[in-house]
Length: 493
Image 1 (cartoon, one colour):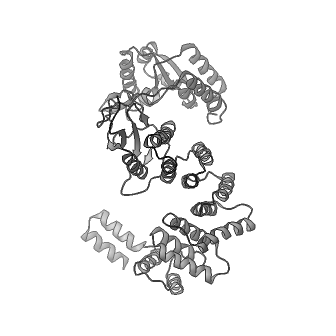
Image 2 (cartoon, helix red, strand yellow):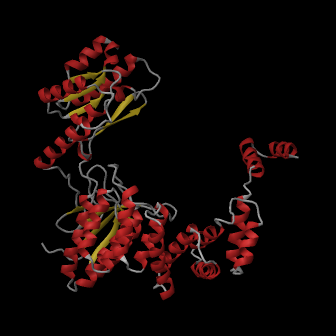
Image 3 (cartoon, one colour):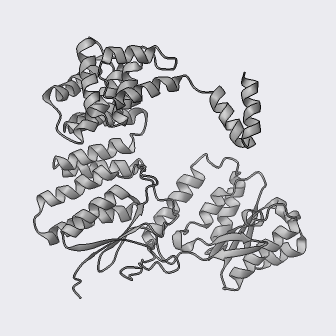
């Protein structure tokens, strides 16, 4: 039968569509039947819970007696059927003397979601507190999923001190999630625990967990509750924007919407804008973003830390011999500073499927470009490149400070040391167009949140198809059209 279907599909449909159709038919997962039934039952508001479970388990799939309760609850919460989920949770609590850990976690997740929209009932609050005590009486250490679920549920009832303990336990085995940190931070601000919130923000940043919407929202609302004077509120909101600047953060669309609502209520203009790539100029207020530079003290501290801890003290670069590393460090001490650091091998291999001579010519074009601008160049290459066309190599070496590492070495420690001053505004980029390089100069501005005399420019992350995005540590790739321009309606000159 399958052969006939396959033959008919090949006759009627293009090959790729036919193959996909047949595969879907032959490989259809029986587990989908269970989930499709569950979703259809939710759509019809079916609430005969014993019958629902029996019907799901009667179908083929991965849902079984052990996980059926958790699967039902998670599906309800994911689809925002919170009333049905509450009813099912009450059924489970009344019909089971001992809930499975999966069902317990799912109920905690439900109460966290409910608590975001309205106050929980006394019985729901008591369930969270009882679960906290029962889990810690039964287990010395909680698993990751249970810890996360419990922390979020405790925050939903403002039990932030107990949430602190759960977070500390989490830290023993792994890094808490973005949501765990931001939910606890938001709860602390909500309860006017400012010192604790600021300490937790520092911990979150140290763990590379940029703040999410809830933390920013409660931070802003704390200032709105505490201060009545608009000027005072604006002054304190500046501390939030400064945090975004200092951590090169990119905020979410939800955070931007909250900022717009608050700043406009305080008499400010708040606009979505683009920043011109060539100049860093805002197309709305015409202000230009600045090129933020490290102070001498910051640079020396950064240089020492990278040299001592990352290059010399790390085992990341064991393929680089100590002798070679010392030779390079001595070479840099003797010949630095440089205007430009060129990774010779990567530039040469921008031309794939080409001869060594063609690769060197491409590299020569890049070197000539910077020589024409009177730049002092450090050229980093591999020793096997010395076997390439001698005359061209001699030309390149006469116009640069050049250092060639052993072929078994990794370039990274040399490149990091020599290019320590790389910031957004120092990085030149080379692109291939045909057989010729296009050399893009560094940005003339730092693409991170900045304040000028009139207001703020904040980068934000656009959300695709309504999806919620986890905040990311800024990777240095600027987003030119996702900016929020904040400025007072009347600027005092």
